[in-house]
Amino acid sequence: MKRTHLFLPFYLLTLAAPSAFSTALPLHVEGRLIKDSAGRAIVLRGVNHHGFLDVPDGAWDAPGEPLYSGMGRWRPEVVQGTLDDLAAKGFNVIRLHTVVEWWQKDPDTYQDPYRKVKYPEHYRQMVKDVVDWAGERGLYVIFDFYALRNESGVQSGQETLPWAPWGRFPKVLKDRKAFEKVLQSVAQTLGACPNLILEPYNEPHGDEAAEREWFKFLDEDLPSLRKATRIPILVQWDRTCWVNLDYPPYKYRAATLDWVARHTLFDRNLIYGTHLYRNSGGGEPGMAHRSLNGPVNLWASNDLAKALSLMRFPGSQGGLLAPLVVTEIGADLKAAGEDRVHELLWFKNCLDQLNGLGVGYVGWAWQDDRQLDHGLLHEGQPNVAGKILLDSLRPSKKAPPTAQPAD
Image 1 (cartoon, one colour):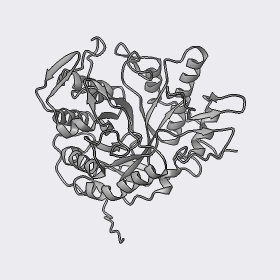
Image 2 (cartoon, one colour):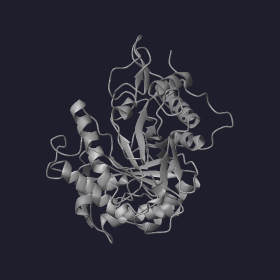
Image 3 (cartoon, helix red, strand yellow):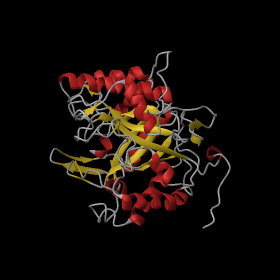
C-alpha cells in the first residue's frame, strides 16, 4: 500500500485553536529529541497522578488534609494549587491514569460504599480543566487509559490489550473499533490542548499475537487520529525493560527496546515509553539483576549503566534514535532493612544515569506512601524517595558516566 507523508513540521500543522492560554508550547519530535514550537529541546520530568483511576474527580487531597479527603470532591482551587506546587518544584509534566468506561459515559455522578456525589461538571470537563490549568502553568500532561472500568470504587486492573478477546469486559470494549472510537473522542475533546501527550494505553503486553495486534492497531489507527490532532503520541509495549547481567544477550522479546525496530510506525510525531523498577512489588526480576549466586536486583551505577546500554536506551552506544520517556519509575518503600537502602540507592543512581543520557522520567507516584508502595509523599510532603526525585531535577555539574556497551 502506498503511503503519503506530510513533511511540514507537526507544530505548524495546527488543526484547532487551543481552548485556553497555555505557557507550555506545543511539542514535536526531531530525531531523538522532543522540541517545543520555539525549537527548544524539552526533557520531560515529572510525576504520575493516578486519582482519575479511583474517582471521576481525580481525588486531589489538599495539603494538611487526611488521606483520601479529596475523593468525591471537585475543588478547582485544590487542583490548581497542586499544579502550582508541581511547577514551582521544577516538574514540567504530570501523567494521568484513568478509566475507559468513564470516558465513554462521561458521568457527573459517582457512588461507592463511602459516598454518593453529584458533581458540578461532567467527568470529561474535569479532565479538560486539569489539562488546561496545567498548560497555564507550563506543565505538559500525558493522558492514558489504565483500566476498562471502575465499579463502586474498585478499578478493574490492567488488561493485556483493552479490547476483547484480550480485554475482560466486552460490554465496555467489544472490539478494536470500539477502542478506536474512544481515542477519536479523546483527540476531538483534548487534541487542541497544546500541552497534551496522548498515551493510548498503559502497559499493553502479551504474547507475539497480542504484540502483532497492538502494532497493527497503531499503524492503522494513528492516521485517523491525525485528522483530529497533531499532538505527540506516546507508544509503549510491555510493562518494563529488564536484563540479567549474568546472561546477556536476552531472549525475552520485551526485555529491551528492540520492539521499536520490529515495528515501523510511519507517524513522525511519536515518543516511546517504558517503565523502570528495581522492585515492582510483583516479585518479578528487576530492571538490572543477576542470578548466578541467587537472584539479586542490582543498584550500583556501573551495573545500571551496562543494563541501560543493553536495553538500547537513547544516548548509549547503539541506542534508540527516537525520544524515550520512562513514564514510571520509583522506589518501593515497603522494602525493609538493607533492601530498602538498596532500593533508594537504585532510585538515585538510575535517575542520575537517565539525566546523563538525556532521557526524561515521570515518578510513580505523587501520592501518599500509605496508599501506594511506590508513593513519593508522606502526609502531603515528599518522603525520602520524593526528595531523591526532587534532587534529580538539579543534577550536579559533573554528569554521570554515559552508559557503555556491555562486555
